[in-house]
Length: 73
Length: 163
Image 1 (spheres, rainbow over the protein chains, first blue to last red):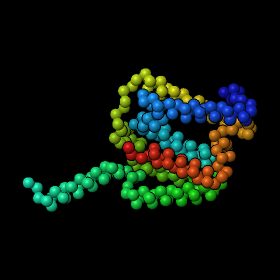
Image 2: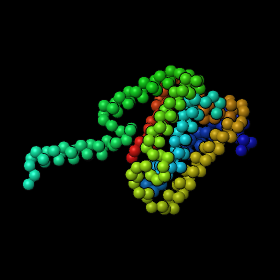
Image 3: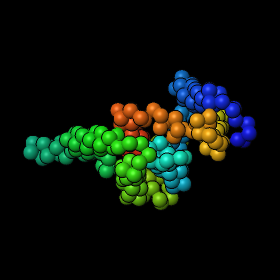
Image 4: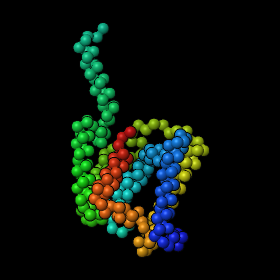
């Protein structure tokens, strides 16, 4: 997969913008269309099972460590 | 026919029960005063945490403490046990739209994860910016770091809060 990455910083930033645009755009779409589950519905769905709860807790902890604590990752 | 005194006490008990039902009984719920104190404490914690430089040892400690607290709360609430931990509303009927949307969420989150991992495996970091590299640039300003830290704490509280 790494060989498929663009070779310039600008292009990678554009890909990041597209990825986040898709995530936010789909979330907005779910708020317009009732039948589509939003990310909140996905979280509530995951909270029903202990494995889902572990995934949520780990994901949250990883996000904090990733954004604030670690040096390279 | 009940006496007026009994009626008043019954009403008081009912009001108290409704208050408990409205406010919840979880560790993250409580009276307005406790909520205010909790918010003040969180504000101070975020301000102190933001005074540390990003990716330093004090910041690692400041990040580790909420994670340890969240794990303790999760264990206390029985998150490690099978089955739901609280009264969740019944699942909506599964429709083709639900399946497609769920698959779309999984796909989008997978693409995000794969892209992030591919960037992480590539060097130099200036050309291949990971999420934390981008965040590190934005978090150079202390107020931005404090807001981001508060948002992360709020997300954790939302995940742990009883419904």
